[in-house]
Amino acid sequence: MSVKAHAIKGKSLILQGVQLLTGAIIASIGLELFLIPNQVIDGGVVGLSIMGHYMFGSIPFGVFLVVLNLPFLYIGAKHIGKNFAVATVVAVIMLSFCSEYAATFPKVTNDPFLAAIFGGIIDGIGVGIIMRAGGSLDGTEIVAIIVDKHSPFSVGEVVMFINLFILSGAGLLFGWDKAMYSLVAYFVIAKMIDVVTKGLDETYAVMIVTDLPIEVTDELNRQLGRGVTILHGQGGYTKLPKEILYCVVNRLEVTKVKDIVLSMDERAFVTINAVHDIVGGRFKTRSH
Image 1 (cartoon, rainbow, N blue to C red):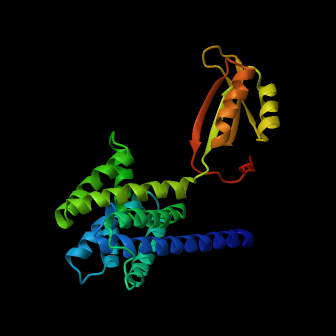
Image 2: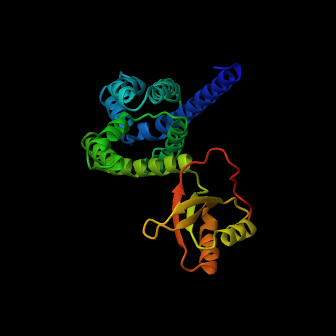
Image 3: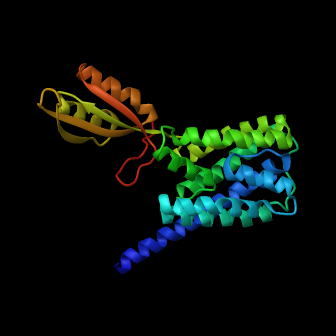
């Protein structure tokens, strides 16, 4: 590996470490200043760790978080990849230390509903940053990914099934009102993770099959200022050559793209898919 490649890799690792630490600090604030003091839990291993800390108060939350994640991390290293496992170990250890420090501060509110909302927002942002950095705090997601590969159930369905039992346990331990607050927190956290990992300004990949590829490309360039890639394909039924246009637009431009294309070629075939991340290229949101 060249010196330049080593430098790039070193920079990438430093950036990843900073992201993991930032996420751990933010998540610990949401947990220790809002959720845990009000007996409101998150799902997965974090939720189990909160319940373990409540039952065995002398054992810190961070200890449960590390111990309960260990078997999942071992499985994850074998089935998902060592890089993911290492990033997750670092994130879990960082959150454990940050939680110990954050626990010394007084809780922000005594209202469990406010704790569920604001604690969920803060915790979700922290977890989202950790996930963007390639790590995780929840070993149950690893199980869900593996089960998904060997069963008809999706990752989301498996995670929801596991969390149903965890939230039921919270109801038995803290009372059913706290379990319902925990469910609110769980959905808030999930939404905030989506916001952090996917972004508020959603982008979409558009594929267009048209008999007027050059004309449509020129019009998209003129009206939207977006780059368009022309792919060469072939009709599966007719066996005739087809030009397929590919471009990425933001949420506000989706309708405009459809209007432009269909006004020029009413027989055009357009597919639109949400894009979760963009790396490289020259895509950026235009001001409107």
